Length: 207
Image 1 (cartoon, rainbow, N blue to C red):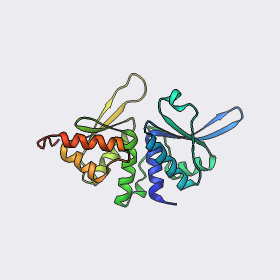
Image 2: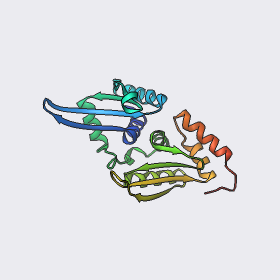
Image 3: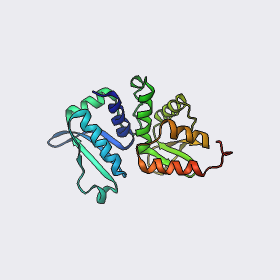
Image 4: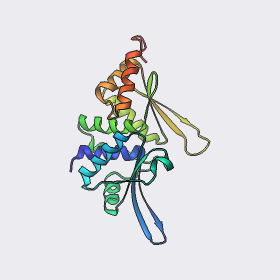
């Protein structure tokens, strides 16, 4: 099994996916889902999943009209068991970066790139990631610094509904250039937007 592809799958599921089981009157369902607004990322994830587990996920019926995004789903107890045994909890507040599998620089980059594909917002002067997972967000901060990319974590911030959230910011032209050069995105849309942001920033805006 390709460890790098497995790490990419973990990053996508930890950010914009779900791995869970639930009881109902006929038994227990083991469910794996992934959601995205980017069709290219949808296809990339499905191909990664198929290459790794030799099975493709299926599109969720009427996903765009019901969810406002693309969705993939598979019910499979063996895959659920494998993923949770390997990585633990995938809940938004509980997931952890699989540090034992990130010894190589390539692995760190692959994980970050996929996570940022799903969760990062590219603004006019920054990359921003919001998460209710405090430990996970601080782990990303350390992982970025390990690659020479400075970021800061702010929060907690209260929400009217749900858990408090944290914000990771990458600001300053050099930090954004470092991210663009060292990590980047699989998403063509975010790659293009970040390129335009960096090109339009004055040199003195360092952070």
